[in-house]
Length: 466
Image (cartoon, rainbow, N blue to C red; front, side, top):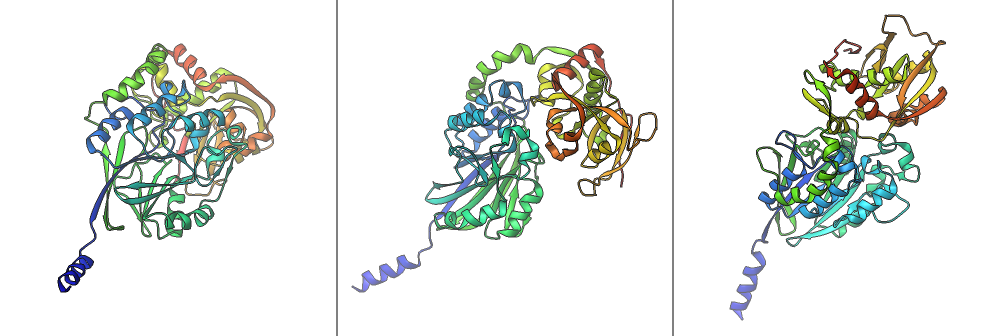
């Protein structure tokens, strides 16, 4: 009897078994399946994932919209690769709505993993709020969140039947029950940086936030309250790894790593899945429209030559006095060398059209005050430290003439802006509004064809003060 008691006592003080879980994560792939210049893309990430053998593979949204090999098939090609890679969950990013609700539902149903968002109310129930995934005996609870900015960062027509709930209130409602059924909770959020911080501060019990949306990779995680916030940038240039060490069911250690998708051959199985899709659009993708003598950056601090090219093309095609473009609609820079249709598609992937209208000088100034805007036909200065609605410092016509509040000007914009996207609500009050039906990238493609050889124009039309 004494021996039995001693054995039971020994068992009672034996340390709980240790469990090591490897988690890998992506975000903002935006249809980039194939590497560019030997790096990036989901096929390269697939090879890295195969090397690391993660227990969980997660994605923080914006899987689609950005390349012809994705968008020509409404994201079907991307989901096919993600299914083969063994993703365990993803969430809705704002650009998952770009193809419309029917196409989004088709992709959610195609997925062999749950697609989540707890704060999005859809007219169908295919998208879940949370999911518990048992992993090596540890119950990993996942909750998906989608940025509250979505109604103004996809075309408003795509979300007219959708509601986006407050992030903090949503977590207050769903987190307690998820915690009861989980040993460790992870927030997967397609969130603006301010939203990430807001959640971390409001819920100190959350220790890991896997995020996306801002397209800025975090070389080191952000430590906020008790949480680590991780992000991998965009277009498959990086993949994240998180190592979780548990003693029993209690997390004892968490470490993160950002892995560059470079120097690794694409995964052959991923390439095999992509090939039939790529072959269907190859000819169109590789059509050469012109030549860039050097690279065109979309970054204003680098001269914004690509923003200048895009707005100059809009103004030339329409004959408007002024052309404007939301900078978020111009997705990536243009490298030196041959300008292909496929590259212009990546720069302008959205199915937006050119709209012309007349607005007063006062309306123009109120619109420019909302945020940094690409321009042609005017010269502007912005103070980005100021709140939205107050960021315009000055604006004149190209020749230095002042913009008169009561004068009327013809303006070319895109239908996303005209519908109030990116908070450009003033354009709804324009007069003689006409949707030309011309797609943005088609207008720029024609402009490039006619110019044939293009050199970056950096003329200081946009100035950032302070």
